Length: 267
Image 1 (cartoon, rainbow, N blue to C red):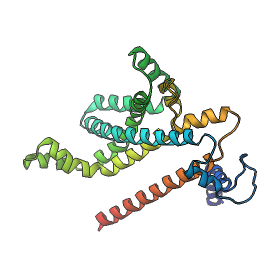
Image 2: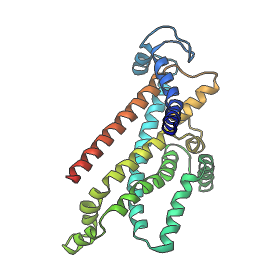
Image 3: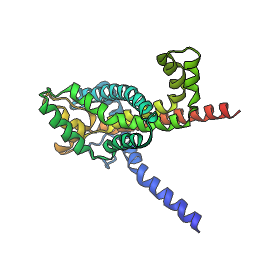
Image 4: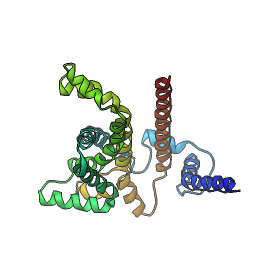
């Protein structure tokens, strides 16, 4: 009975998580402007999404491009910074290491709105013109701790003597880092990059407070502004469906590769 209840509870939670996504995906194949109203099967919304034949099409396209570019830049830079920071934290001892890990965890626990307001006040204090650059810097700031958290476990699993052996054999610290540490840490770095990319795509509060008044929109701020007008652009439904499918396929590919790697090394 306990097993049945446990499985039922698990399936219930999964249904709560994925039912809204399935609902959006189903109604992305109808032309109705109102979500929940089925007017017949149609792929017109997908066609409009790719051809720009929709109201506010250029604004939505611009928001999507901004979102992807900011997420890619933030994820790439935060992966580099987070990996270096994780190596530094791993090499610390005692209270220093515990303190740095605590400081790294605070931005992740901290509410997004607090981070957004803090960065907004910082940019105002420094008299930095808010716009594309400040949004990118803000995204790098809150993404980096997630990369650190992804890389640190790989450092703990790694044989600590490998790096020292490379130095003893004549490798420079930079070459040992590139040839020895990076291959060992690559799974954690990839996970950190994906996590940072996802967090950047998902962010609203930090972007809202650091984008300034130049009209810069990401997907989250575009949806917010669109909802305040009294409804959402219907083409957002196929867009959300495609984003979900891309992320799902990416995660499946990564998990399959990790399983193959585990089997390879287990042999």
